[in-house]
Image (cartoon, helix red, strand yellow):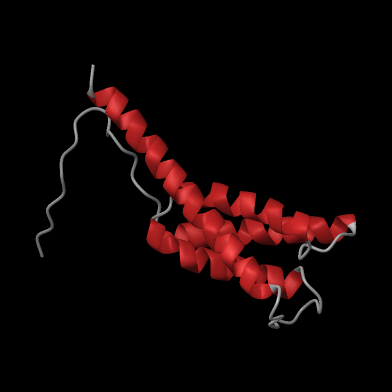
Length: 131
């Protein structure tokens, strides 16, 4: 099968996006690290402070992702947070008042990180292309 690939000379105007599976792996590992560090300090990762720190980590991990990866990123990070950061530890449960807020917060963080990175890359590419 013949596959056409564009030939690029010099610098690319916009960086290539990361694979969705790579973004999911990095964000899940980062979430696990944040939740474990909160547990070692003696605070649970399911608290408001833990969710804020986790949202920042998710936004940072989503900077190289496609926007379509945001829902999966949010659900994977929520599953890690729910299993290891919120009581009962070691079980995935559904707490009706808290979990929809956690999922929405993580989804907003992933989408914001992706959109901010795309806008920054587009502005930088526009500046390189126009004198």
